[in-house]
Amino acid sequence: MLNQQVMTQAFNTIGLIGKPHHEGANNTLTALYHWLAEQSYTVLVEERTGQELNIDSPKLVTINELGEQADLAIVVGGDGNMLGAARVLSRYNVAVLGVNRGNLGFLTDLDPYNFEHPLKAVLDGEYITEKRCLLEAKVLRHNSVKSLNSAVNEVVLHLEKVATMLEFEVYINNHFMLSQRADGIIVTTPTGSTAYSLSAGGPILTPNLDAIALVPMFPHTLSSRPIVVDSNSEIKLKLSHENSEHMHVSCDSHVSLPVLPGDEVIIRKQAHPLRLVHPKNYDYFKILRTKLGWGSRLF
Image 1 (spheres, rainbow, N blue to C red):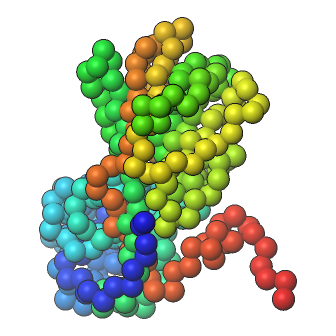
Image 2 (cartoon, rainbow, N blue to C red; image 1 turned 45 degrees about the vertical axis):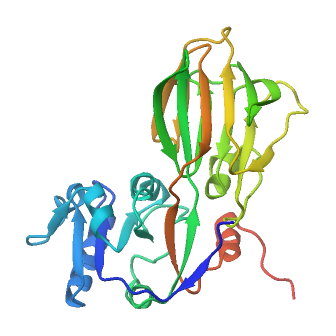
């Protein structure tokens, strides 16, 4: 299980990652940098981010160097920006905290205008940490790996054309599950269950669940429904030779892996989880109520 833990370990070296060409995010990053420097923390700035900031002689590093050297990475932006950073930072044992400069902000906790008090508490060791699993997707052609990437939210098999069916078979741990004619299929982590999968009718999976959901996209068979499997399962999608050649496997809607008829797509849990950090007052169900407009208590 991927459970939350209340931690007491303090942080010393802080890495900053921003949202390129976003004035609001740059303003927040500049304020964060000066505040952290005044508190005598060692501050690293991701090199693309640092080149856009009005800061004298920041220590610029690549995102991989930041992952290797920092105790805590602070990502300023929306969930999309957090996803991009998380796919890299998950390979390192670095804690990750988000400052919301986007829209929904399911993964970003801190207010960009009032970050000082909650951030100070986190830096002093008063925080909750949890491990969020990622997915690894591999495209196999004639038993050879043609491409691979990872996803924090979801892996999606889809066609370039809208409202066009593709045909594929689904196997779980090499056991045949079903054949499918649909616009595609979404394979989602608990983190991604409130993203694209939710709009396709998928279930919400709380972050502590060690599970993966498969959500068909506009299936030809109306009895086709989402299914939840153990996160240690290997999911194999076998593409029919009758499909067109304009198919893709999308990772978090950021990375696209081309797929041809007859290819196989192997999806499994990535070995390295993301180490996500929240303030101690973090409440997952409060976030759901706020972001999804759920009702408050009646009494």
